[in-house]
Amino acid sequence: MSLSRRGPSRRGLLTAGGGVVAAAAAGVGAGTVPAAADPPPGRGRAVRTGFDRLAAGGYAPLAGQRVGVVTNPTGITADARHLVDVMHADDRVDLVAVFGPEHGFRGTAQAGGSEGRYDDPATGLPVYDTYTKSGQPLADVFTASGVDTVVFDIQDVGARFYTYIWTLYDCMEAAALAGKRFVVLDRPNPVTGRAALGPVLDRAYATFVGREPIAQAHGMTVAELARLFNAEFLAKPVPLETVAATGWRRADFFDTTGLPWVPPSPNMPTPDTALVYSGTCLFEGTNLSEGRGTTRPFELLGAEGIDGSWAEAANALGLPGVRFREAYFAPTFSKFQGKTVGGVQLMVHDRTAFDPVRTGIALLVTARRTWSGFAWRPDDWIDKLTGSARVRTMIDASAPVDEVAGAWEADLAAFRAMRKAYLMYH
Image (cartoon, rainbow, N blue to C red):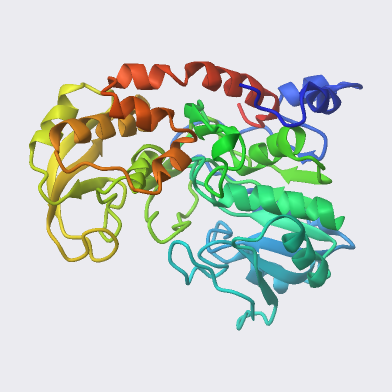
C-alpha cells in the first residue's frame, strides 16, 4: 500500500540539509516550538499544553497577526479557563475570529451537528462553522474572516475516526488555499502515543471519519499529525508551526498529566471512554448499541436478545488487559432508546497490555457467533470505520480474531515506519 500522496520527495525536503535530520529524529522539525527537557517522570508530573506555553511566551508566534482559532470546549488552560476568553482579554494577541467544529465551539450540539454562524455572547467575536466544510468553501470562510493566521487547539482521543483530526486536515488544506499561516497548539494523546494499532485506511473508503491512510489507533498527538499531514498528504503544504506540550512522554496516560479533562464530545465523558473508543466505536457499524445514552458509552455494548453467552465467549479468548461483565442497560437515546438490552461491559484491568482495536474485533467476532440477530448497518458504515471492506468480509467468512488482525499487519508496519519522522516526544 502506498501511504503518501506526496511521495518520498516531500519527506526528503523535510529532513534535508543543515542538521534538520537530527532535529527531526529528536522530535523537532522546521516550524516547531520544541518541548523543553521533561521534568522527572512519575504520576502527577505537570504537563504544560501548547497553549499554556504560547501564552507564557507572550504569544510571540502570533505577533502582528490577525488571529482566528479553531477550537471547542477542550481548548482550556491548566486552571480551566477557555483559551478564547483568555486571548480575547489579552492585548498581546489580536484575536478576531473563532471557528467551530462538529458539536460547536461552545459544545452545544450533539453528534452530527454544529452551532452554525453566530456572534459569541461572551466575547462578541464572530464564530464561523467549519463542520462539513472543506477545500475552497472552507478557504473562503478563512478569507471572509480576515485572519492572517489560523490557530488549532482541540483535544483528540487517538482514533482515526474521531473527526477533529480531519477538521485539522481540512483547515490546513483550506488555510493553504487561502494563503494563511497555520499554528497547532499541542495536547497529549490521552491513551498514550506508544504505538499505532489496527487497520490502515484504504483511500477508496475515504470520508470525514478518515481522509488519509493512517492507522485506526494512530498513537500521535495533533501536532505530530499536522506535521505528517503537511509532509505526506496535502497537495499544497501550509506554512506550519507547532507548539509542543512539555512534561508529557509517549507512555503517559491522561490521568498522569495533571490536566483537567473536558469531554471532547458529548459521548466522550472520561479518559476511560477514550481508552476503549478506538475499538468499540466499531459497533456504530452494527445493529448493536455502542452505549450511547448511558453513563458508560463505548464501554457498554448490547442489544435486545443478548444474554451472558457473549461475555462468556469474549472472556474465553483471554484477551490481555481486559475482562467482560455480563451487563444489562436501557439507553436514554440512540439505539434501543428506553428498552432494556443485554450485552457486555468492558473492564480494563491492565491498560498497558490492553489493545483496544484487537479487542473491538474480538467483540465483533464473538457477538456474531453468539447472537443470531447480529447485523451490519445497511450503509456499510463498518467499512468506513475500519477503512476498507476487509474486516467485514473476513468476519462474515467466520475468520478468527488472529486472522482478521493479521491481515492489516503489512499496511500497519508501513504506517509505523512513516510516522517515525514526525514524532515530537520520547
